[in-house]
Image (tube, rainbow, N blue to C red; front, side, top):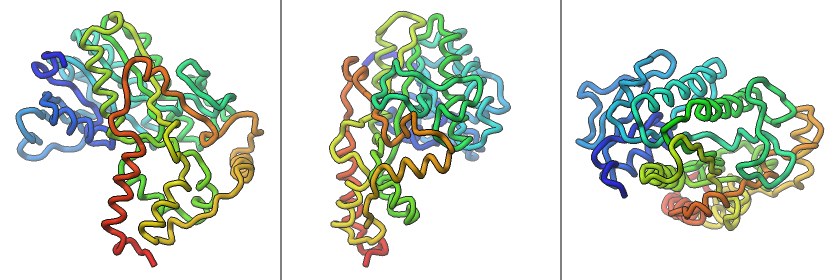
Length: 337
C-alpha cells in the first residue's frame, strides 16, 4: 500500500457508527493514522486512544470549518449520515456532503469514498440492479418509485442527492461512491430472533440482501488505496454496489433453520408464507400497484466491483458461521426451550 497512507491521516466521518467503528479498527490494525469525527462530546483526555487515532468533535448540523477538518489528510472515508430524522436529512446527507467535498477539492485531498445506499434505486422495474439501473427522483418525493415508509424514501433521495453533489464538485479529487446493501454485524444476524411473530412470518422467505460489515470496511479501504495509487483520472467519480446477493443460503429462513438446529430457540422457528402474500401485504400498506419490485425481490449485482479486481475478504458464509458459533456458545442463555 502507498506510504502516503501512513504518512498522513485518513479522515473518517461517522466513526462511531456501525461501519465507522469497524473502519477505524481496520485502519489502526493496518498501521494507518486516522482523524475520526463524532458529534458527541469528547472525553476529558481528548478522546485519544493511541498515537494513530485523533478524535475531532464535529457536528454536521452546525459546524462549518470544513477546510480545517480535512487539512493535512490524504483521503476521506465519508460514512456520516442521518438515517431516521427527516428534518435533518437534507442538511446532513446533502449539504454537508457537498461542503465536505468542496473542502477536499480546495485542500487537494487525493481520494474520497462516500457511503451511499442501494435505497437510491427505490423499487426497481427490473429485478437485477446494477450501477446503471434507474434511480429515484432526487429533488421530489414520488411514492410510487419506492415501496417504503416516508423517512426511508427521503433517506434514499437525500443519499442520491449527496451523490449528485459529489459529481457537481469533482475536479481533482478522485471520488468513489459505494452503495451497500443491508450491512450487518454478527449481532444483527442473530437478532432476527427478536423480530415480531408477524414480521418473521412475512419476512422469512425474503432474500436478506445482507453484506458483512467487515467486508464493507475492507472494500472501502481497498477503494481508497486504489484512488491514492492513481487509478482513474483526477475528478473521476466511480460507483460500485457493495452486495453479496449471490451468496449461498441468502434467505432469512435459511439462517433461521440453522440457528434453531443449534440453539433450539423457538424464536427461530418460522414457516415462510408464499411470496405473493408478502407482495399483497406491501400493496395494502403502500396502496401501489405491483408494477415494481419490492426490495426482497430485487438482486443487486456486484459484477463491477469484481471487474475492478476486488473480492470480499470474509463473505456472508463466514459471517453466518461466526453467528452460529456465537449461538452455540450461548445457547443456554437465549430463552431456548
